[in-house]
Every structure is written in C-alpha cells, then in structure tokens.
Length: 406
Image (cartoon, rainbow, N blue to C red; front, top):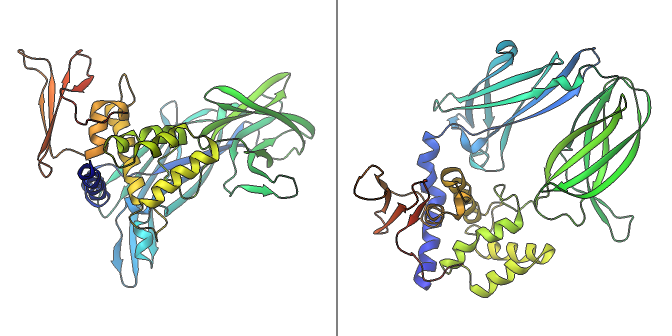
C-alpha cells in the first residue's frame, strides 16, 4: 500500500505541471463576469455595472523590455429582443514587472464598464480573446432591469461587499460579520427591510432593520453575523414592501478561508470527496474517519493540517497539490455527471486518481456486446475498462481497482 501512496503523489504532482497544461492551450480562455443592477435617477431606466475578471495564468504574457505584456480583445454586446442596443469593443494591454504575477492563481485583471439602459430585460454577451494565442471565451447572462419598471420606488440588487470579514471586538465573545449592499431610489423616509439566510433552501436565520432612504439613487449597507455559519455557500434574501407588495432580492455568498482552494465550496462535501485519497492510502483510515465525523472548527483544523503536511511548496501561498486534486474533482463533475455527480462515478474516480488518460478506445456500436470504453495510461502501464451495463451511459468499471473502498 505504501507503493500506491507514493505513486499517487507522483501522479498528482505531474498533473500540477503537465496534465492540464496542454488542455489549457486548447480550451476557451477562462474568465468571469460579475454584474450589479442599480436604479437610475432617470425614470424608466436602470444602471448595469459589469466587472470582467481574467485570471493572469489563463493568458499568455510576452517579455517586453523590463516588463511582461499581454493583450486582450474584449467585446460587450447588449441586446433587447435580439437587437443590439449598446456595447463596446476595445483592446486591453496588461503589463507587470513580476513574472510570478503572470502565473499566480490569485492574480486577476479587472475590466469595468457601466451602462444606463431602459428598464427592460437585456441579454448581455461578453467575448474575451487572448491576442497572442488566439484563445477565446464567451459569457452570456440576462440583466433583469425590468425590476425598475412600474413601481413607486426602486430596489436594486443585493450583494456581499467586496471586503474582508469584520470582527466586532466590543462584544463578548467577539462577533464576526460581513456586510451586504443594496441600492434604492425614488423613496424618502424610513423603511423596514427583512433579511433571511437559507442553506440548501432551508431558512436558518432571519432579521430586520430600518433605513432612512433618500430619493436619489444610492447604496446602503447592513451587517450580517456569520458566526455559526460553516464553510459553504448560502443564499441571502432581502425583502421590503413596495406598493403593498413584498419585493425580494437575493444573492448567493460563501464563507471562505484565505488558504482554501477556490474550487472548494463546501467543506463537508470536500472531505467526502477525499475518499479517493483514502482508497489509495494517501490518508490513513483513522485520520480520514476522524475528519469525516468532525464538525465546525474541529473539521476545519483537521482538513487544514492534512493539506499543510502535504503541501509541495509550503513557502508559497498556494497548495498546488490540493488545487490539483479538487481541480480534477471539478473536471470529473463537468465530464461525467449523470445519475451521480461526476466525481462519484467510476470514470470520475479514475480521472481524479490518475488524471486524463493517454488514449481512449470506444466501442459504442458493437452489436455483439454492450457499449464499453477503454482508458490507457501508457506511462503507468495501466488500462481501465468501463462498460455501459444499462444502456443509459452509466459506464462502470468491469473489475475493481483497489482492495480498499470507502
């Protein structure tokens, strides 16, 4: 079993530098678009604020004198009923003197745009292209500006403030909280607002507060305690009464730790997803069982201690091994989800442990047998056969791989 343990470490470390490097050259450029909708001081209009975040490591930087330089081609198209009514196209040059910033996973380039638009739902399409590699990416979303239509006053979207967790040390024990921001316009005076927090659709907290509103558009902030909230994603709902009707806005937010991989969104789930490390003896049975059974701060400490011990570069802010493992979990979900989440399927298990196969042989139309697929790992001298016993695309291993299961 020690052999498997060391072999898995080598396979994961290889993935950090090799397995997904080739795929990145072929995949669309990765970026994200955040948008906020706010009321306008112009009747029948709203404001759309957009932030495009492009990870530096997903684009190519070229040495130019003392600097490293990358170039992006960006296009924003805003459509109403299929007709373009607004947008921009421009070239963006990004420069840095630090090579480390060109490859760091926590370095982003942010591009911001604001548009004043009629109070109608809009389709927004964003294209980003890396000029040096010609890799391109596309994002599309609906901007619901119709929420500013035909009401006595206007309530914009609610979203978490882009700032660290606050600690109120004046209370015993100290209270940790984050702030949420919403915008409003068209109303003067004191109004009551109610907030609710949901965990997987179940309400776990509720509170209310009053705000002295001003008629002109502006932002307002309110605090929400995060004590007793675990490392996972929640939904906050904000509501108030407009024209004798309850108006609601909602946003998702996540409690995070700075040293945690951005690919992990739920600590309980992340611990369960570590079962392949147990099956390969990369984590011992008693340590894994203790982590599974733990809750709250105890589970957090056990999780952090394990990955800290297995950090291949402890003097850097990123744990490449943890990032690689959960990156494979994420890719398994994208590639193999069906009756189960992709990571729980047999193909997801093999993909997570061994990475992308060197060759894939498909037999989906053989009349004499059920559909099956063979994955080849030439460097490991291994092959795995998956058969679709049901005919619904649920490919299962034809033979067990490990003596240990979990």
